[in-house]
View 1 (cartoon, rainbow, N blue to C red):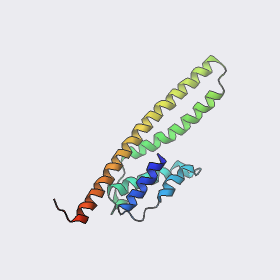
View 2: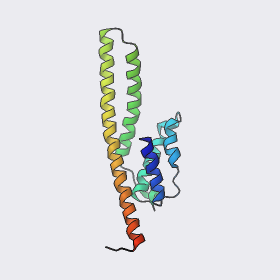
View 3: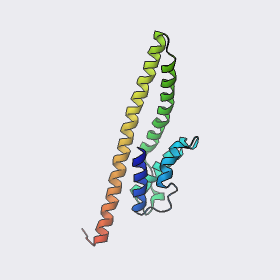
View 4: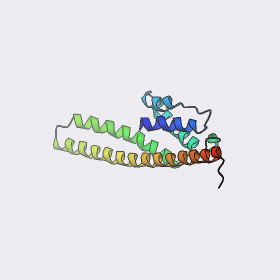
Length: 145
């Protein structure tokens, strides 16, 4: 995921997006900075989306609710994963083991949803970047349709 975010940011810049707040490195780096990692990675991916939609006027582009849902489930996943870890280390009774398994199952389910949401984001950003790239090639070669 992080390699893709780095490359997508780099590609958006190569397509002509200027004045982006997040560099490719910081788009990834914010995932590792405490407190800032609660919202900065979302902002970085949002900028990548906007710049992928239109590099020239990326600040004007709207980001879809899909990004907010992805980030919501990302944060929920972090919380549930932590709970699953805590429960798994302290299971002494059958009831505790059952609770631990339920929390782990919820964690796995959220991670599947999170993966599907991110896969959708990746495919849509890819399509938008490829569309901009093709347009730049057509303009550069002088071919008109």
